[in-house]
Length: 330
Image (cartoon, rainbow, N blue to C red; front, side, top):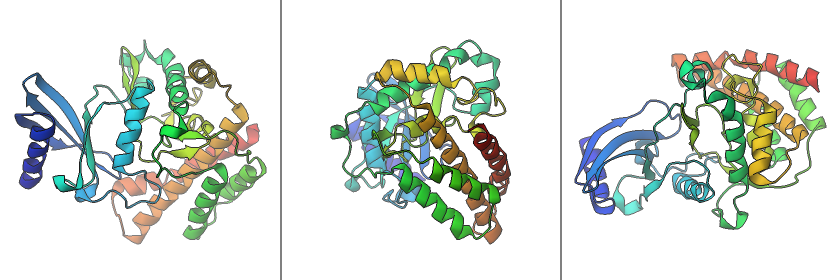
């Protein structure tokens, strides 16, 4: 810890003109990357910052689906230029800095816990506007020119996503008849490739920062960003698992699809295809169910005996109920 803090101090002193580092601490959460909060003292005053870092200071390229932290930082900067609410990237580490793959960004005050967003009285005044704001943010995000995107972004059309999760499911070796039914439904309703854009890949409660006065103030965690169908992002935030019990409000448990679609169309000038959104909501629900079973497998095998893994694993049954409802509606 002392060596890490000393190295960080040298970096912010050189590149951000900081005199000192204050209150360095690792935050909870962040399943795949380290997140640290700290402040720096400069001639202009105190600035609160966040360090997003590969585990143990590694190179950040352990996952075939992760964009990589340097790419994340570039995407956040592009999103900011497109008027998507994001933190300001202050510095991207170089190999010679000795911190591993990481970047430093401004700290945004707000709340990301979905249960608080959908239930707390503190958000009651702004809650009716949130679905539209989410649509506006996605509309601007998807309008970012493909010519400006990092060249290493993976392409993941619907066919590839379906094939990937079918492979993960099959590898578990435990049949779930509802999952089999969902795969068949998705194959029967597979859309053509159509328009492709930058896709955030994990746009949902937990990765969106909300403020009780202004609403959406930051879109976070860009590690699953890729090039694909823009309707994927709109379908993912509608997955029932992100509604925290407010099942009648499909967008994050706080709003309607109609409001989100209106915001999207206003910001992008492009009409939303509800059928494509429905496809991605079904695939997103199935995907989360398979991810839950993956966590249970990790618990059962002894690879990760944490209570969190077991608790999330049991939620696969909830996704099966959600899938039956979605398929019955079609």
